[in-house]
Amino acid sequence: MTTRVAIIGAGPSGLLLGQLLARQGIANVILERKSGEYVLGRIRAGVLEQGMVDLLREAGVSERMDAEGLPHDGFELAFDNRRVRVDLAGHTGGKRVMIYGQTEVTRDLMAAREAEGGISYYEADAVTPHDLETDAPYVTFTHAGESYRLDCAYVAGCDGYHGVSRRSIPEERLKTFERVYPFGWLGMLSDTPPVTDELIYARHDRGFALCSMRSESRSRYYVQVGLEEKVEDWSDERFWDELKRRLPDEVAAQLVTGPSLEKSIAPLRSFVVEPMQYGRLFLVGDAAHIVPPTGAKGLNLAASDVNTLYRLLLKVFREGRTDLIERYSSTCLKRIWKAERFSWWMTSMLHRFSDEEDFEARMQLAELDYLTGSEAGLTTIAENYVGLPYETLE
Ligand code: APR
Ligand code: PHB
Figure 1 (cartoon, helix red, strand yellow):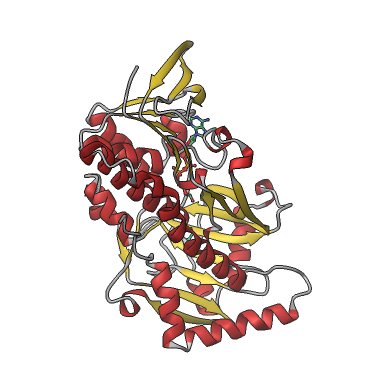
Figure 2 (figure 1 turned 180 degrees about the horizontal axis):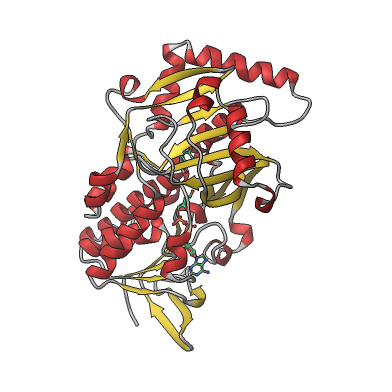
């Protein structure tokens, strides 16, 4: 089998890249380890930056997002039993974000690919890239008991943090940057109306809490928990009680509770690998970098990598410009490090880090009080939250 771009992984990165390329007539094949159902069962992020919204429109998969997504002009920071609104639009010349679940983005992309007859192998095993440093790389895999070889011009490693792509690069060629945080987020999804119209990021002495949503009738809430915590130990009642304790009183009083649809714990990590390319292999999204979710940047960074790789591949296949693609990694990393910084900073300012943190707690409160009382502070938060501009190629 031969194609132009072999895409490993059918998360949002792989599916979006495949869709953009297919619309330009650039052949690609997606290889995914899990089933489509499994991929759609994962509950992930829900805030899309304007850049990602525009890219989904360009990919022709925005119809449902435009109809059902919730545009948000602001969000709230809560601390010290107070609430302060960050006016995103007001501090960024009218930019906003779109609330639309990653699961729904994935569903729309899968449907578009199926409708257009794009080739995807779900439940593909032993996916292995070869000869990446030559101009004739290929990927081998097995599917339904058969062995396959996929010849291609380029390989896009869109297979997430645990994927095979990054591991295919010799260790001595990569430098890894990492910070593991001493806590995780326990998330809960419920068919209850969101407590307010906008998201609330709350700092509290008991730990961080986040009020988010998927629609006007579906809420997504999170509380910071210790790494030793188990989901089984968190009844719905215990979750709601803990959430209420961490929110300003007037917010807690309005919270509508109900049975959970899903609960899960995710650890928090900052991670970047440099460079993001090795010969004809390009790492995209979570395969190359992870951010703690506090800045809502993970999915959006994946989209900006896709944007860069897509435009560079267009240069290759349309204009024969194979020189520019060498800049993939350095182009992406500029934006990635800024989003890493913002995510780390938001995490540091809003979470409880240790039991003996009197000084740290005062520093966090002073920082929040200062930032939210300053136009410069609010602008800093707003312009990072809506997303920094995509890097130009030349
Ligand atoms: N072979 C084939 N597919 C694989 C392999 C493998 N060896 N390993 C992993 N995969 C698949 C996974 O099953 C998954 O479907 O690759 C996909 C990777 O998807 P994601 O982990 O969602 O990563 P990505 O597409 O980069 O999405 C961006 O950023 O912060 C996050 O929530 C955000 O998940 C989102 C991610
Ligand atoms: C979510 O809705 O899942 C969500 C929203 C904002 C974040 C992280 C997660 O910062």
